Amino acid sequence: VQVVESGGALVQAGGSLRLSCVASGSIFSINNMGWYRSAPGKERELVASITSGDSTNYADSVKGRFTISRDNAKNTVYLQMNSLKAEDTAVYYCRVTLPFSTYYWGQGTQVTVSS
Image (tube, rainbow, N blue to C red; front, side, top):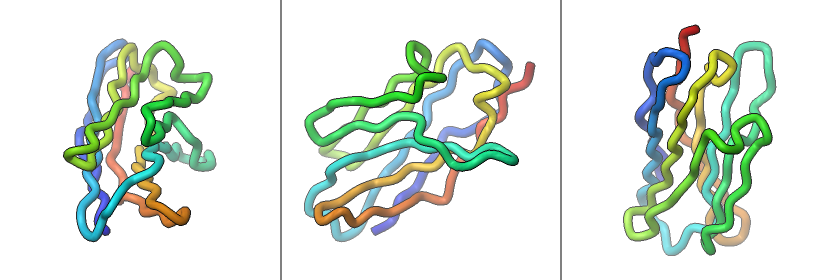
């Protein structure tokens, strides 16, 4: 199974970005899909997650600004990020959870927000 993120970029504060993550390989079904981020000097944290039933969960710091969605036919999860702040600067990672709690990480995509 391969997990590939895309969409990271340098953006000004207040701007928007849309991250994408595609899972491929021997996949019968996907349970949860999630976005995490890792900033310098900080531990990796959950940003947002979405279940197979489209239930979502967000970190308090991004509620109202970020939206997670998924396209099951494409094994893809998206993260729409609006009103970006300098503190959103991080490497964003996608995690895909398959049945039996098997999960895979992507390689990460850099998001840099200039103030």
